[in-house]
Image 1 (cartoon, rainbow, N blue to C red):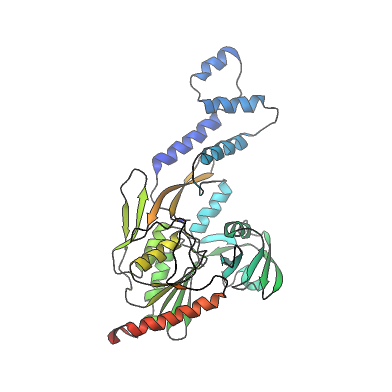
Image 2 (tube, helix red, strand yellow):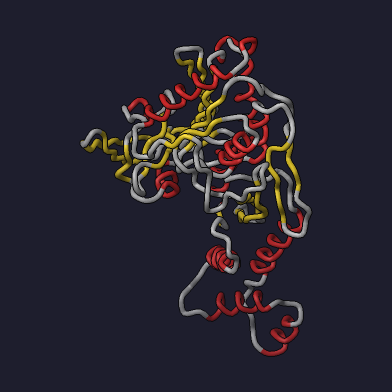
Length: 384
């Protein structure tokens, strides 16, 4: 889920005003002069709410009517990403973008067909302690990647039943959700001075952490860098731009387009390492902000993309908090890669394809092979 950091205040104010006005109109309406006197100052939405509250055979609460009204407004949009969050749900969403969330500590990716696999496991998490492994295919909870992710996240202390398939066997786990922090960038050093940087989501501070992983120890990246975006669902647009900037000397990262406004080019925030050989790992779970990074690095001829076709989400959402603490989220714009491509519905086709039904380690091995080839092409003075 990519977001543009600016506030669309006018749109937010209108949405909030609609819901507040609706809630204020729930007072029961009488007959005669009183109703006639009030009608001039009330909208049809107010009048309908008052009638339902007073006369419906089925008792309904103000909160239920408010939720129904907001849901109906969102349904008028041709926006598959439009959402209405309760206050608690929205607090969870914002916490996740701040780098803290409640869950079991797994990142999800696509397996063969429509199945979901465990792309990686956060060290020290409930999943890691229980023995869940990268490459496990999720059997339950059932559903697509979004449904499985929603089931695994939730209130700290809650129990989650997870069933996976591994090597033809089914394994059952009971995991307790905990609050997780600062786990969206992990670094591992591979043989041959290759550094793998894994980004689980583009939460606050990820761009800074990726840059530090690239520049902190030059000897560790002499053999190249593997940027692993598999199973990365996206996150903050600003962090995607900052992450791509860590590998580019300058110039365009992405173009952001909003209704009734000229396209806005978003450029490198600070020059980065434009020399070290770079491979980006992707799969069908690589979406939104993660596709911005992969698309920018590929269009700028900075990286070789390895894996399977990405998800294909080329839109930007923004959330607006309402007066009761709930929030609506709307698509407010779309983005294009530096070459002008709109990835919505198409995604990114890798330069080197590795079938999605192969073990995760196969793509990693292929990435290291590609890095060795890239090193050979470097001038001798630039080799480690």
